[in-house]
Figure 1 (cartoon, one colour):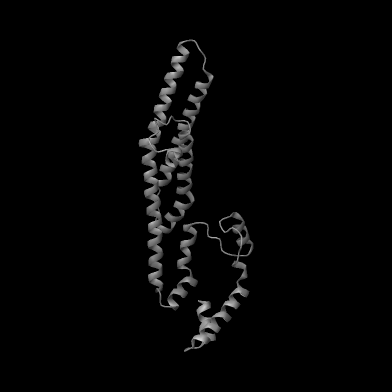
Figure 2 (cartoon, one colour):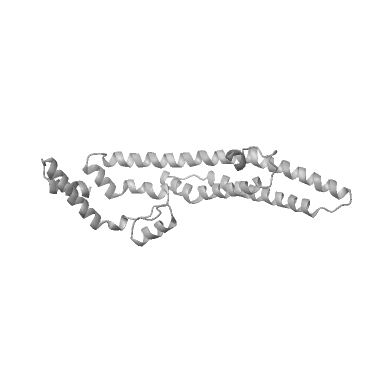
Length: 225
């Protein structure tokens, strides 16, 4: 907005190509002087840039849920209306559509994860646990101690318990309802995503100890081949 306004001021209404180029360079020089703080020659994907941006007073929108509300800010509404790109009503409608999409996509992902855990991952873990329990019982029946097998059985049981607990938390967060899509969006970001990540972590832990012939999904190693 500022750039376009300044360019019009310096170039005039009907500028020649030379005048337009001269005005553009003049405005660019002002931009560099005034906004040097946004220039960063380091690794933009590194945490260093996040810290540096915050130090420079730049906005740090960490997620989609943080970024989308900017669309309905007065500054954004005025900008789109001024250049006749979108009216206030149109921009707010787009905001609501994007929020609805965000909530719907995360709901689909959460439902998919729950289905995968209940119908594929947990059954594989339970089968592995049953095989280990049979092996432990058979070994004990011979009068031989097998601390390693006992430990593996306990590890499997604990991994399954952790996964079940994570799944229960996810299912609780998934069924919550809200009066507004905006509240649902913030809940999805603050509670649903962390619950999904915790469930994923628990499933990964189980994958590391379940035999590959029992695991129902391609492993990381198989996908890399």
